[in-house]
Image (cartoon, rainbow, N blue to C red; front, side, top):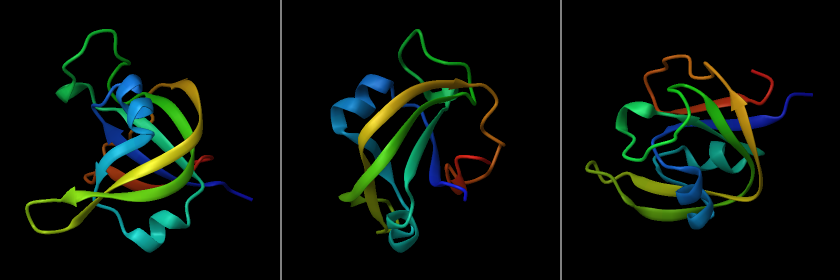
Length: 111
């Protein structure tokens, strides 16, 4: 059976993600997001302001989702969330981002 996941296209570093306890600040469908088991962080190198980062489009961290925490609102008044994780593994999976338009994708680990 596939493992449900949320993939996010992020410029945040591993250290920032781990310091916050998850990946912020995403507009997600709350009910959909709460049903997901894993968070997959994929490098957006176009907006990175630190050195020694993974190549653009590389999946670099997978974490077990422990919850969602409100994290402000976007310009349109949509709730933003921190996707919290309580366990994680560092990974190196090149070309994981399929050039999707939205920086959040509901998927599976197997996909």
